[in-house]
Length: 297
Image (cartoon, rainbow, N blue to C red; front, side):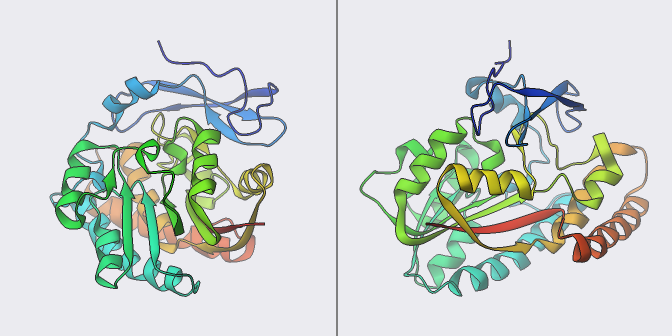
């Protein structure tokens, strides 16, 4: 049995309504209900697998952040984009002018942290997946933890990053409180999140890869992120578009929508849809994914 929430996981309101029903296209083909909080507007998966159950929903060969190989077309594209994004993320984070300590939550195989380590940063990571964590430890040493709970309380960090991770965390409020406790007074939290208000989300509807139920427990947009910041006395100091994400989300969405279509057709269509989404977002601000930079008030 999946666990059913009777309160919004962000604001604790009991006032929420069914929003949609989405299928897990990647693994189980089960359908999951999305609910929308009528107070803070967060959309969340409910009911959802428990922490003990959720692991089986990550067991599929195409969960690319947990591996380094480049086997199929989509994975090769993912790895190429990841390499480009690593340098972009480093430039952005180093421009914030903090000292050089970073905790990357959901660090995967440790590629981002290895890049930071090569630039003389003190690096720490959190990665629940055993295989990915083992690969990360080979690159970084023993400072890669199984869970956020395992990060020592006496540590503090200039940067705490969660690139497409917060939407996977079961205890949202408890995790955010721990993150804020670990953050230095002048540090920054970096959140990258899918945006269900984007043009590609509206185009693909229930096939949109950004829903990614049940692995995505929460489904954010700019308004619900503002509510999150307000709830935890944080300030959104900046936000940046994640340009590549519209193409990648469209590529996966095309595959879910028409699994029998050829790779070339999917690639061409997803490039067109990704470009359209980014063009629309230049006016609306609703990019497929958005990177938020937050600080303590």
